[in-house]
Image (cartoon, rainbow, N blue to C red; front, side, top):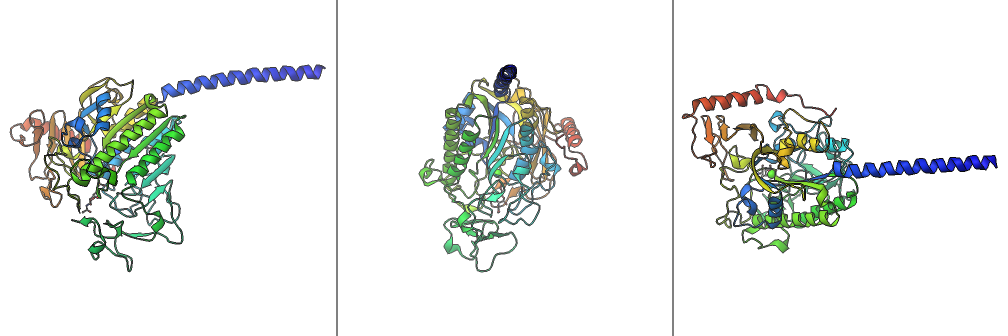
Amino acid sequence: MRINYKINLALVLLAVVLAVACQTKNKNTQETKSDRPNVVIVYMDDLGYGDVSAYGSTTIQTPNIDKLAQGGILFTDGHATSSTCTPSRYGLLTGVYPWREKEARVLPGTAPLIISTGQITVPKVFKEKGYYTGIVGKWHLGLGSGNVDWNTHISPGPNELGFDFSHILAATQDRVPTVYIENGNVVGLDLNDPIEVSYSSNFEGQPTGLDNPELTTMKWEHGHNNSIVNGIPRIGFMKGGESAKWSDIAMADHFLAVAQDFVQTHKNEPFFLVYTMQQPHVPRTPHPRFEGATGMGPRGDAIAEADWCLGEFMKTLENEGVLENTLILFSSDNGPVINDGYYDDAIEKLGEHTPWGEFRGGKYSLFEAGTRVPFIAYWKGKITPAVSDALVCHVDFLASLAKLIGSESTTPDSEELLDVLLGKSTVGRESLVLEASTRTAFRMGEWALIPPYGGPALAKHVNIELGNAPEWQLYNLNDDVGQQTNVAKEHPEKLQELITAFEAIRGEDYTSFKKPELK
Ligand code: NG6
Ligand code: CA
C-alpha cells in the first residue's frame, strides 16, 4: 500500500514536471518563431537594374519582382561587391570584399572551393543560431580541393560552409559539368557511365562546338565551343554522365521545385535559404511556354520566366503560412550583358530596352552598371514600403542578418545596416570599394572614383565599357549618374580626399588580409 502510494506520488510529480517542461518548450518555440524570422535571399544571375519594371523598364514587365519592390524597400543605390559572378557571391556569403581573395575570379567548373571551411559565412551564422540552412541554384565558388572525382562524394562544398542542404549547379549554365549536385553527390548518376571533366583537352571522339557546328542548336559567338550538351556548346570538356545531365529548358522549373520543397519541408523551424536562379545568364534557355513572352528573344523571355518563378515561390511561402515571418532579399550578382558568347537574338531584339538603366557600363565593368543592381528587401507586415537611396551592398548582409537573428557575428568589411534594410533608417554606407576582374573602384557619397588602369576601354565581343583609362576618373553622380564627365581635374581636393579614403581601406598588401573565422 505504502509502496503504491509512493509510486503514485512519483507519477504525479513526474506528470507535473513534464507538463511544466512542455509549457516552457511551447513558450520557447513561440518566442523562437517571432525572434528568429526566416530569411530568403533570391539572387539572379546577370539581371540588370534596367531589366526590372519597378526600376523603370517599360519594355520588360516583371510583375512579381515589382510586387516585392512596391511592398518593400526598393534600393536605388544597392550594389553587388563585383561586376562578375564568383567574386560577387564570395562577397555576399563571406562578408569579405572579394578583392581580398585572389582566387575570387570567374572560375572554371573544375576549380577547388575558394572559401576556407574555417571562414565565417552567412549560413554558418544562421546555423549557429539553430536555423536550417540551404542553397538551391547556381554555386560558382568551386568544389573540392582540386582534381574532383565527380563520381564520388564531392567535398568540401556548400555543406562544409554552413549549408545543411545544397542542390546546385557547380559553376555556370554555360560550363561543364552540366549536372545537378545535391549535398555533394551528382543527382541521377549511373556509375557505369562515369563523368570526366577537363578544361584543358577534349576526350577522344567527343564532338565539340568548334569541330561539329552541325550538332549545335544554339550557335557560339565567342568562347563556348567545347563539349556540346543538349545541342548547346559549352565551356570545358565533359564525357559520360548521360543520365545525370540536366535539361536546360527545365532548369528554372527544377530549381523552383527544389526551393519550394525546401520551404514545405522546413516551414516549422527557422530557415535560411539562398535561392540563386541562373537567369538571364547564357545560354538563355527559357522553357518553351515563355517563348515570345517579351518579344525580345531568349534574354527577355528568361527574365519573364525568372519573374514567374519568383511569383510561384512567393505563393509557396504564403500557402505554407510563413510569408509574414520571412524576410526576402532580392538582388542580382552583377550587371547586365547582351552578347555573352552565343547568337541568341539578344542584340537583334533588344529594341528600346536598356538593361543597364541610366548607368554606364555593365557586367565586367567598373562603371556603375557593373555592380548597381536591383536590390529589394521585402517583409510582409514588417516593412513599410519605401524607396531608399542609401548606399548598400551585399557584403553587408552578413553583419545585418546576424543582427536580425541576435548574433554578434561580423567582419571588418560587412557593415551592420539592418535598420537600413528594413527601411527604419536611410543612412547607408559612407563608402564602398567595388571590384571588376581584380580591378577596383570606389564610391563615397555621390562621388565615384576609378583609378588609372591599362587594358582595353571596351570589352571586345560583349561591347561593354570596362572603365579602363590612363588617368584618374572622378564622377559626381548627383548630376552625372551616367558617368559622362570626368571632373577629376576640376575637383583636385575631392579627388585627393577619395584617393586617400580608398587607399586607407584597400591598403597596399590587400590580399594578405586575414579572413575572419567564426568564433
Ligand atoms: C566568361 C564567359 C561568359 C560568362 C562569364 C561568367 C566566355 C567567352 N565568356 O568567361 O559567357 O560565362 O565568363 O559569367 O567564355 S558570370 O556571371 O558567372 O560571372
Ligand atoms: Ca553573373
